[in-house]
Image (cartoon, rainbow, N blue to C red; front, side):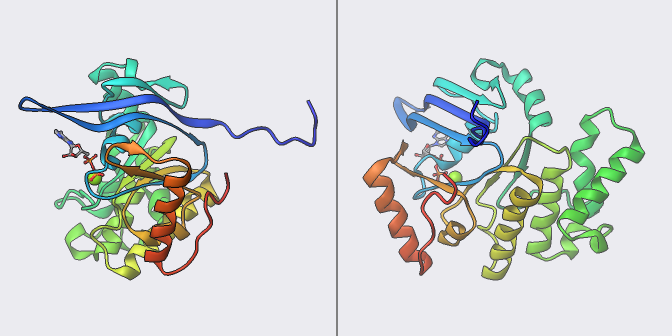
Length: 257
Ligand code: ADP
Ligand code: MG
């Protein structure tokens, strides 16, 4: 092998001809049609598109929350479409960290206890669980608030607790569905910057669903969806330019690809 040639980055996520159809009464809803894509490990990517375009459907397939009607979904070498519900739940607990729009914290637990929650599903000792929760809280800069209850924290702080909880198992993949959807402009930017930092400093692979044009400045690559289809070529370029205009400035198309 030529020593001057850097090895190709590992593909973490691979979708081949993936479709997801929902049945609503007698109607078939094609939430996602014949979608193929790849995401290398260590990237921060966004799925963007109008409401109802299939973004959440795609994210749920990538994170093993849902299974495709047709096609192949591979993550970190595992074929998710071949797992049954129980296997998928176990796989998800080990490999995926989830971040939601409304944070989904448990109100009666402290920030620290919320962060440690996913570790209850592991065989780790109590001391080790506490140690890992502490590290995750440090990463998001929330150690000083570790013993606060979620309702005494701001929206931005609550989302940082949720991000720490997503990181605490050291997952291969972090997925976020509209993580800035319930935040003001400043906290939205802080959240996007934190996610960017997780990729840059810790090599995390992050897949985010958003229709926030501000996200363009923070991600490595954007996949554009419309009516269940992944846009490619000229159509993708036009969708990207429209978002750049909405964001009020240029970003770099496919920053690292
Ligand atoms: P987005 O996240 O881009 O707003 P979704 O992936 O949630 O879009 O939805 C894509 C399409 O699939 C929409 O038409 C939506 O109504 C439909 N859909 C999503 N989930 C379900 C479901 N569980 N049952 C029936 N239809 C659904
Ligand atoms: Mg959605």
